[in-house]
Length: 304
Image (cartoon, rainbow, N blue to C red; front, side):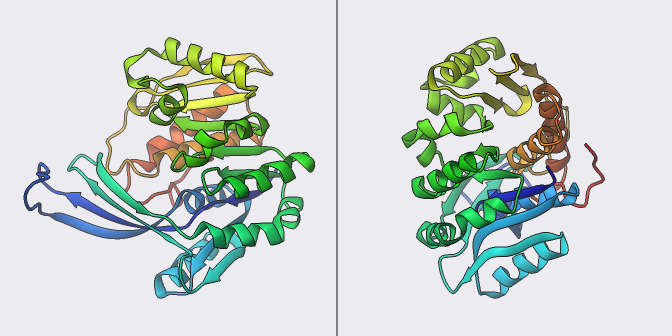
């Protein structure tokens, strides 16, 4: 499965890095950078760097920075023919403050206009899925987009791997998770689904909760990342379940770690790895990404 369709967003990330201890009530000295972002865009760039043929379905704006994003994706060999260019509303903006150790302190997102992407997907859904072997979906785009993509992929017997964005669709349409090949989220997102504080329970307890939820909701496979604590995973079909530690890494910038984990995990799964091996690959890719200021592991020598 080397032809992958990624459906997701393009963002421009405005990142402010404090050089000293951050004071939320005063002035802080640091560096501010604009970096290409967006869950879908990050995943597309990651997987293209691993040698997959990547088709990216999204929207972008016909602005200098929008043109720059597309030019960079093309340089990375991402096929952007299904990225719709519009004058306004095609990209999001994410503003984030990082402390001197690279940890996120706070963020605000301005979402793209999802109605533009929804109409775009509606017009091209069958075709873009038919051209690919598997689908990677940023599931919180809108209920309509997620339902269209998942149902059409299921009809064509194409596996769908998904990760959340803002959790709006996931919490409202948990029935869609049963139609996925694998659902990947972090412990905060899992806590919202399970209605608990996942940071206060052990790996064993979190895995037990996940298994109970998966069996109750008919979810075949799920992976929950926990930052420094590693991840837990299960696959009801194969019986695989367990936990993995993280890789100790000097953190430069923690953003993009979840997208990198998802990219590595799915890259291994579509090449027939076990879920445990795939989770190990995802863990490695996440550790590589947090060592740099960019949002992806493109340009870093990696292999799966």
